[in-house]
Amino acid sequence: MSQVDCHKDMYSFHGAEVTLPNEEQKDMRERRDNGRIRLENGLRKNGHPLPFEFSSQGSYAMRTMVQDQDCDYDIDDGVYFKKEDLKDNSGAFLDARSARVRVKEALKDERLAFDAVVKSNCVRQMYPAGYHIDIPVYRKVDYINFLNEPAFFYELASGDDWVQSDARRVTKWFNDAVGSQLKFGEADSSQLRRVTKLSKKMARSRKGWKPNTASGICITKLVVDHFVARWERDDDSLRETWKAIRATLAITLRVGHPVYADKNIADDGDETVAFFRDCLISSLKTLEVLDHADCSQKKARAAWDNVFNTSYFSARPDQGNASKSSLLRPATVAGAGLTFPNKPVVPNKSPGFA
Image (cartoon, rainbow, N blue to C red; front, side, top):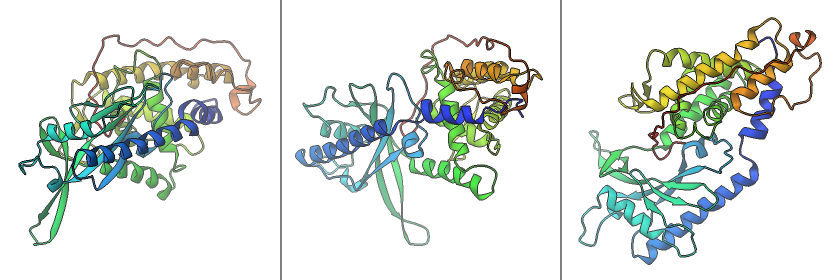
């Protein structure tokens, strides 16, 4: 356990600098809802059947979005059609790309600054503020199972193919993991969610890191798999979780899919996961000062500032004798310099993941 208790600092940092303000969340919900209405109106205008359901996905649904100074946010909002409703004029089923094109055309609106664009796994609607809404297109496939009972599954319009998938299962996986912490009394049930968001914040704390680091779902999966609960100590929980992740990534960069056991969301050799691993290594090196017998509150805060590329911790009011180390003579120490790879990497991001 760290010599200096920085839980209050970390909790405050999470609330002020990591969690999205209510006003921003409200704006995103309004944009999402307006987009749904626009899509339905466009489909009606073009004479096409409407989806039977919309479902928010990814970090928005899991409540793990983090603040970004460039407002570089993505909301994943899946649209679900019945398979029979995705046909062309001749009655043939639409292929995966044609289904995305139909959604893209329905979103066209002269009042918008940007037209929607067809991506490999979704339709993307950009907004001038900097964020965008990704709309994965799904179809529901009904069938009769081996018990002669009605059943169904979902397919995602991915590339040129329809691929069995449903991102809502990933949301359930994460929410179940959060709930399990309360069930077993290991930690505050929100600590896992906070550690996930803080890890994503660190990974994107420099402008040049965002295009190079692991995707949000990769980081989330790694945190869930290696989470170390520390009751009333978010700072220790975060650090010990990072240590556990670092140990695994020293052996393999492979990250398994949270729902489908036969799939990976990152394989060995994935450069974005390697970049994230190197961020962890340097960050944990900086935080070694926390183990020193002479570590002061000032030193600890400087280290956390360095890790998150901020001055927030050092600007916090002094906590007096709140920790063992605060009784020691304070000394000014700069956090260890962080060095990270500069090689540009194009991340592998899938819709439904942030």
